[in-house]
Image (tube, rainbow, N blue to C red):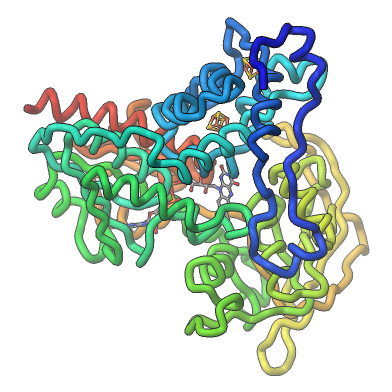
Length: 471
Ligand code: FAD
Ligand code: SF4
Ligand code: SF4
């Protein structure tokens, strides 16, 4: 295919469509929904990029991926070059190409989106990253850096921890990641389901880190197995990236009934422990026939789509605002609807009703309407008088949000926290304790993969500076 197209020819190309598994079929299995672009489709999409001198798309990316450059290499079918550029800027491109909210980040700034549709930057990132995974032999392996003799501990093996570990290892520091769970990846593995992010992608990224010499110790809870003080004594610096995995409770009657899950418990049982999808899994899950998921974010979509795949005939999203206010990605909402999920909008849950044996039997709700805007600028839902009604359900999943887990912070009294229990850090990730840095959800509250990775990258640079100064 020719890359010497005129601007007019580039503008005449329509945005590519992502091939997807059939909705009826996929709503009963865990296979990845988005199938990825074929090479010709990716090259053609890359040719839609008009190589803007001002590079607005790069400003929209929290880690500043060199978007025009990698797309230009792809348009010219120089795939090893495209992969090198991408991997140089982004530690987890195959992950970001799948789960980044591109439409509100890089693609939101794309000039082609002003009068038409933005270049499909996320799809192209995924294509190049997947190509690199299956063509590793065509890429030069990374040279191992000379050791600095400095040791860094990373707490948490999610996107923030993985990114920081990779950056620090590339600078020659000896890095050990301590992870509370028995496996790597953080939310990428236990939260985001296989049908959006296949686990083998996380395995490949983790293997790349291991090849750089990073050590990963699973089943170690900092704050229980070891304290932060002990880590600080054994390591020259510490990066805390333990996420925000503690569920916010519904605080309503019936929350302790059998059949009520927090989103993290529900997803962890299925994604990490294979409950419901592997008949040999020792972890059980209640497969409801009628499932209500409370919330409107990505986590709620992941839960409700998982419930459908576990066999629910009726899988519902219960959300107290309207669809326009839902924080979930538009693509996830569309996919969920195609898979038969019901969207019960402007509805607030009041109580979970049990049967005489303590099992969930119904959700009592009331209708809402949108009133005045609140501090966040969103219109506040207010109850409609006398609108209470019951929906029969056998499983309820609470996906209203999460916050920081105090396990680590409660045993580190010198670590400054904000009123929500998140660690306070400066722009470089430095905390109130010298040599201790933090980033990702534990600092921001629940955010995004790419923001956590950006924090990991920034903190790694600051830690390198700290260690170099201390040398
Ligand atoms: P985490 O990914 O939470 O990783 C923290 C790790 O630290 C975990 O492995 C945890 O086990 C470990 N840990 C915790 N405490 C300790 C301790 N005391 N000692 C040792 N280890 C500890 N973002 C997107 O951009 N796109 C999406 O589509 C998207 N979907 C999501 C779907 C779900 C279901 C959820 C829950 C979140 C989603 N997010 C999404 C948000 C995104 O996953 C998070 O913002 C991101 O993972 C935060 O990264 P992190 O490294 O800070 O923390
Ligand atoms: Fe866009 Fe995310 Fe890739 Fe950045 S990392 S270019 S925001 S898809
Ligand atoms: Fe290409 Fe869009 Fe970036 Fe311009 S803004 S360089 S068209 S991706």
